[in-house]
Image 1 (cartoon, rainbow, N blue to C red):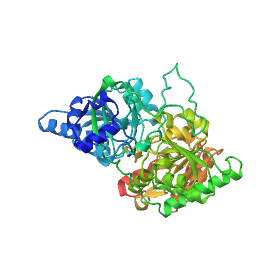
Image 2: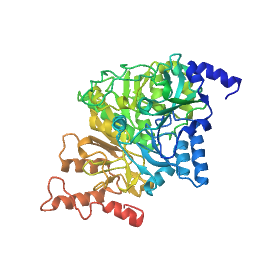
Image 3: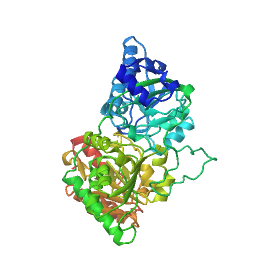
Length: 512
């Protein structure tokens, strides 16, 4: 139990007597988790990951292994979680299967060595697949909340992700009540309870980014809650790399494209259409540049909000942003906490099956901007696998937005690893987004608008506008010889050389 100050925090955050009686230590709580269990935890990016229970679980697994027992769990999350969570459980070899996204080097290494199973799926599909039992039974859910109401409903913290689903389907629930989360966060959430499996589905009634269709709290069966752990710890800060010359150049091309689309009458002049952007310095640079474009009252319908979104809200460029999580740097966390009353009026956090819902993305006309590892000359995009075989992070929500967005853009520097890797290749050895889902490709070299272009014209546009000068002659040569084949076909390739860039890198350390 806690000290008197801790008891005061419990009284303030746990306003239901039944749940207050179940407060225990993290070490005692994790005794409800057994080897072989499927464990679903809260967290999406850096927001809302359990703070004390995960280290206690890693200790329990380590002790079991030291005693000669095998102890692994299957781990389900919203997307990535805090890096320390992934690392602690991976270092003790505690994860047998991981789903649906990861971003930590230790876990990634184990996956690529075949020591951990990994299922990489669209984030909008997770809840449905869990409901349908694709991953077996969810034995335990560990969910961080900001508080518990008098009636026993749960106040979400800085992310929602799949938490509603975990609370619905798990046999046993461990709650972490984090008193660090500002109490003023209550009311920012919109938890929708109307989803269903076919044939009982109904339309999702969101026609504007700021529409609310649910309630501000989670429901939970008190009989399933086996432990309540009090925590007082801030979310892990997301790494924020400041925009460099390359990301600023990419942002410039994107902003020029928006201006062109406005002149063409395809985007509203002042407000564009709802924006979605992935995580990273390129996305931050693009969003950060919006305040220089004269736009006002923009909206965002995305899965994660970064620091740049706070700045845009503060200066009036963005009127409302919908997401499932906050992924903020140290400075961003401090800014958000200091001005939570303001941001609460301009941000809505939703379950990820709603934030990433294809129906809503399509209806709102979202402009999707996501990163890529590479694209081939016809516009097939690889977001996930280095050299076609080694997983990087995962597809995340990019497919949810790319397939269904009004405009689908993929952004990347034209080279990686000091220029030894080209982001534009003859043929991608792994495809996450086919040419049919790719409308615009942008590097610091330029922008290729692929809409309305046949494959050969797409290839010309990508090579001419997006390839780095060091690789453009190689790509020109490849495409010219492929086109010259007597049976070149609709999409010309030299099958014996299609992966020559990747083979050359593996043999020499450079694609040049």
